Image 1 (cartoon, one colour):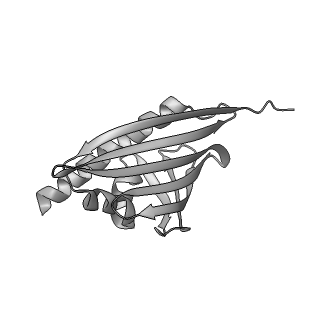
Image 2: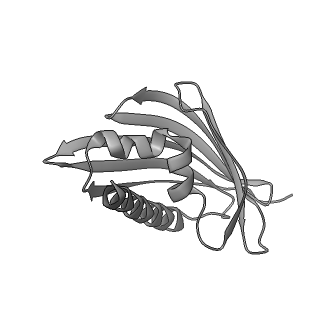
Length: 157
């Protein structure tokens, strides 16, 4: 019998953006914008990305890095308050094996002409396959990519 385990963890990331809450929120709500910063990273091949950004709606993605195994993300949106917060749950699989299940709250707060984003994740990391520190690091990289996306939009405006 294979030994199974669950490691519970949470982390909080605060990030300031030079864009108003409406634009930062839109980067999560608009599938075309989100795909650019969330899924289409250098070295990754996107096999699937669909998003229905409404309460009760879902988002699904599958990609792989190089010749590695597919990484899948299935998200359900539980609450959406435009320009203020998003509450969602998501699971991740690696090579078809579920590695985590998480509850996430993303808050958007106006700060001068910009936005303070607070990302809070409560995760159950399964069977030692995934690690909370790696997940937090991954989200920090994603939020950096989001900053570059927002700065690029501002430069093109």
